[in-house]
Amino acid sequence: MSKQLVNLKGLKVLEVEFNGDNILAVKLKENGKIYVGVKSIYTGIGLSEGQYQSQTRKLHSDLVLSKGIADLQLPTKGGNQLALCIELDFLPLMLAKISITPDMIKNKSEVVDKLIEYQLKAKDVLANAFIHNEKEWDLHREVGKLDRKRETSAISTYIPESKTNKFIYSNYTDLVYLVLFGKKAKVIRQERGITKDSELTRDYFSAEELRLIDEAETIVTALIALGFKYDYIKHQLQQKYIKQLN
Image 1 (cartoon, rainbow, N blue to C red):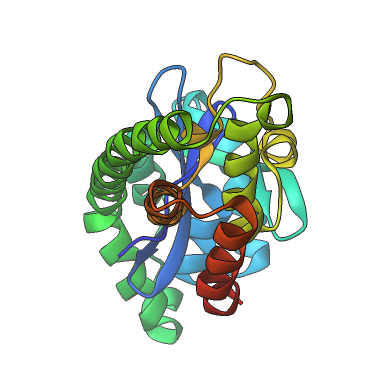
Image 2 (cartoon, rainbow, N blue to C red):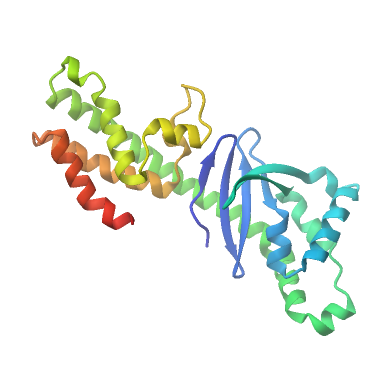
């Protein structure tokens, strides 16, 4: 099971549930490589902080594994922070190099069991999670593009052009974002590091966020076609979503 795929500048972030643990994984947009948060792996297995520090030192000094590690800027509860990650193709080797000692077998059998489970299945589970979530995201994005066209068509058809309606398209976009996320498009772009005009804000939303936007814009389109004004549409969206999302 996995949580929503989050698109950030330069990478896609996915928290994957594996064996009762949450593993942080990222996919770089420039080359398609998948990396895994090293600490989330070691913590999931059940290694202590001291063992984690020891293993990370070994990663940096290992002739092969050192070629697969990278410090990546990842979102955390405390904001974006650098985190040690390892390329997914190197993960089985990293796990294989964690020695199962007689003491672990005797006193920490649960760690041994988890380590074996990780060694056998973790890579495939993480890779498949990205494939599934990317397909889901692509579907929501394509459906959203069609419904966005319907909304803009309704605006141009049913709302007469005037000086006061100069920003009518962006006003309705901001209305949807404000109701769903409490922020206008400009703020969302700033928070998600979208700096180029050619970069579309919606390419940085999760599949669930895209689903909500698509649903809200479908409502907007229908109400515009029925002749309702901006304030009425705003009230209807607030009635539907604010209690639902809080």
